[in-house]
Image (cartoon, rainbow, N blue to C red; front, side, top):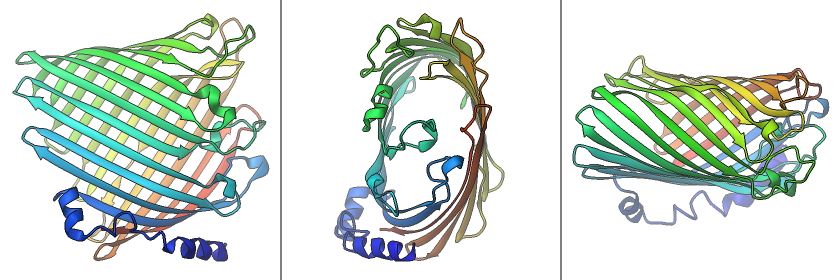
Length: 400
């Protein structure tokens, strides 16, 4: 392990934490990123004692990650543009066939015209190794790269001083590199409208609806097919947005979701769904975030048409001192699987709990040290789906 890490670090030293960024003169970087922008390079080592999430065949794996990224914000009157991006190179100790280059990118534009008309445009890009906990034990542990492109545009207009009409349109493209995953590729478009009543600045109540039109482009719908190739989904909800005093915010969307499959009507589903999130700044140094969501997700299995997923998240952050920041992220998830209409009860319930804690320590100047440790497990009423794991992560980050 030690020799492998040393070899990787030495081999990438020439790649340098800076060839893409450090080579740019400081003045030029400042002109490009602006006063509020920043760039970074990072190196981290992760060790996971059950990388493939299989208790029947536990395998330890280590990964070295080299990353570089930028972020910047530009304010032009009432318009604000935020851009960020990260590229990371991942090398594994044993499973070097999984080595890959991934990345993320985000763009957000908040715009406003006058006092009545405003909106936003958002785009997100992710390229990551697909998590192995999505594979059943009988499937091959094949490396797969998931690439996601998501965009959303929204606009709101105050037809009256307290009454706002909103509209939104969004698209989602979900693609996989491995042949075993191609049937899960998804193209989806969304359309939404809502009517919102403003009681005071930062506080809205209203009702809204969203329609999702989805298509799986690589699914062949044969006479014995158990999963459909297209669907229409509608969600109607009550919406609450409360952002008061700068210390507390609450966002809620509670409603009903119904999906109609294009041909396989025995796989239709509907349920009460929703999302509730609360953020609270207890002090200048401590912030808490709580989130609960209930979603209903389509399942690509012969015996199950959908799963009702309840998720609880708790994320506190504490700035212990000027040089030390501590954070925690706890997630509990329960998935209750729904059988295909006309068949017997699928009788499957999965419960998982994941806990991560991180410490960020400023070593002085532009250098930061990060330490992370995590634990997780899943319990299922179906055999061979349980697992447990530990991971540890050590990294350094240089702000450029």
